[in-house]
Image (cartoon, rainbow, N blue to C red; front, side, top):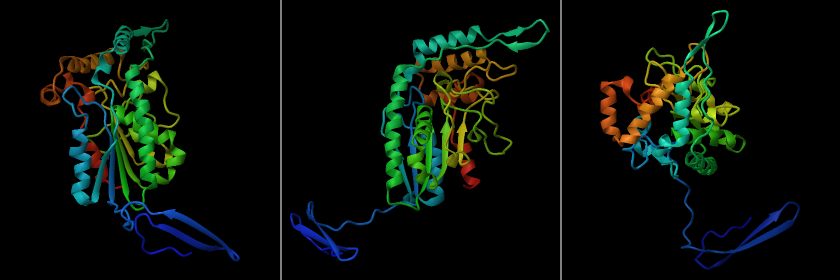
Length: 335
């Protein structure tokens, strides 16, 4: 094959090649741009890719400061800032008003009405079945659909880049966790070559939370507990659980955090349990959702709310209390 070593803008270039047993082919193209030779892509050894949710009324720029201050900072401190490329998905999360919709009003009312216990003729008690409406705000589901499409495109672009040795860390919070999980599962066949490069996947407050997944189990440390054992996220309940929470190749390297009883309940990644001694009960879930809704309704900024929640943590919204500390501990344990 003969390829010219230099050319000028506008110049017609011919490439000739000998193929097989004496065959030949040629191609012609006109040079555009400044004629400068292409330089190889410079790859940072590490890539962080995150997908935002809406953390609270004070989160006007819709970023996730707690993820940046923990996971991203740990990567930069460990590997050097210049060696970590940071990217966030460019999409518009649903507004905070999704917590103040008729759909959520109906779910809270139903959960509060079906949180008692029933005793059969044999004297056996069980929690009354909790049947909250299986409907989510359209603004939220529309936003997720757009986000999933964009996330698949972005992950495909990362897969196809020229950085075969690059380590990748993925993270998603709230709606962003839902989007990231759906994207990884829906496009698992196409994205499979990328999975060997992904060191960790971190999810917080996932509306598709699935307690059956090994990703829902925290590292074996006294200060950390499993997520809800019998409760699934609100999107998993209203729509359906994914056939698999995350692809096989990733689940063992993933962590999905959902605040459970003992901590302020996160009513986004959990729903009322119908099991005796289940978690949370309908009453507990409704109370947790009302606490979160009161924060949005009052428009309290995240900084003021966080200060109050430290003083009275059991009266705070579990969906707003996440930090990245456990994720950093997990990264320190190794891949």
